[in-house]
Image 1: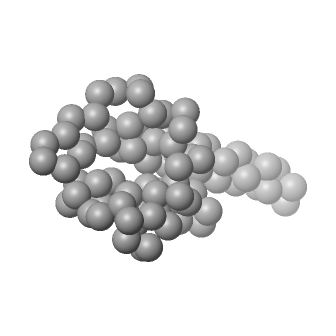
Image 2: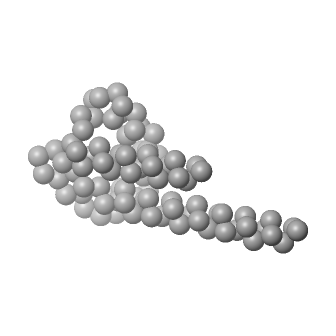
Length: 86
């Protein structure tokens, strides 16, 4: 559930950047603030093309995939551990 919420927030950040949302807006700044610690290791991984305020953060898409894989691995490990306990 936690990784799903995190992926949703990062996806929302990607869409806000894609729509050139005003970063001073309280909602947009809250999303940027919450997701920043989870994206710091992915920043500068790829170039971020921009045009008239619109940014395409490819590193956000990479982060979504990585966090989805981490969540999937954790769930699979929990299934393996708890299935053996029966």
